[in-house]
Amino acid sequence: MTIFKAGLLLSAVVMTATALAAPAEAAHDRAGVRRSLERAVESGAPGMVAEIRDHRGRWFGSAGVADLKTGEERRSGERFRIGSTTKTFTALLVLQLVAEGRLSLDDSVDTWLPGLVRGDGYDGRQITIRQLLNHTSGIFNYGNDAELMKKAVGAAWYEHRFDTYTPAELVKIGLSNPPYFAPGAGFGYSNTNYYLAAMIIERITGRSYGDELERRILRPLGMSHTYLPGRDTKIRGEHPVHHSTLFSMDADPEIHDATEMNQSFAWAAGGMVSTTGDLQRFFGKLLAGKLLPAAQQREMFTTVATQGGPPWIPHTRYGLGVFSQELPGGVTLWGNGGAAYGSWTFAMGTRDGSRLLTTQINGDWSGLAPFDDLFAAEFS
Image (tube, rainbow, N blue to C red; front, side, top):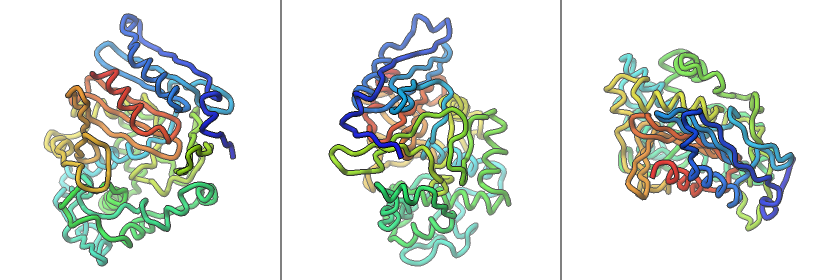
């Protein structure tokens, strides 16, 4: 177990700021984005990468290190855990099935998973698939269960990081807690929603969620560096160390190597591994309307307010597996983001996908500020 003290972090980081750009981009070296990456590391992040694509081509930049122990630099093509960015893939699978006429967004959960969501304030007959995908179902997030959280923080996480959970087990944990609100009465971000959505995908197709993901999205789009690990605890190929405080509330928390873990606890809600390049490919086509018919595209990007429930990202509205975020200057970005132990990821761009930024920090304590700064540097 590799441990660092947060107070010693800056002295452990070998500062770097590198960028790769196509020749036509030479006059547009994105100095503001470079400075933003450097500020993230100066503020304590181990390393940060960003890939940008627009009409001028591809630009990649990095700052900081992939490994605090060795000082190895961040590189293009690294794989990392993308957390809740996975939800966009899950929502896309559901919407593809809608486009094929195999289900409706207005179907109840009970139609496809009869009797599963019942009792203790829940009634799956009153919750629609649309409400699962836009987090208005009111279903409690299993990840916030008090007993489960005891295994997820500090030293206990190391004892339990290779534990395996089934979707049914985690859904049961979520439903053992009271709902946030009545269906449709608010916004409450919940991984349990996306577990139920993936279970419906499996019920309808007769295939596993991972198989459908591979068959319908990853292979057709040539996303060869993206995958759902399942119970595989390692990250395949080149990847940064995922540095984590393990949610410690200490003023000067220890920083651990959290790269290896069993992500069955995140699955269709946050379990995928990808790269900035593959996320560029996926979100570029999604935002450009190339992955869904027009009717389902409109459904995906029809949003609800995110205020009034459990805290979530400020200045956002949530669609079906995607969200919009309004920047201080008035620009609105679209995409998704996610956090995992030791990793924060965002893929955000213009509504038509013509300008897209994908980025990752290989640490989990910096919060949203470095990303807000990066978005402002590129889009304001």
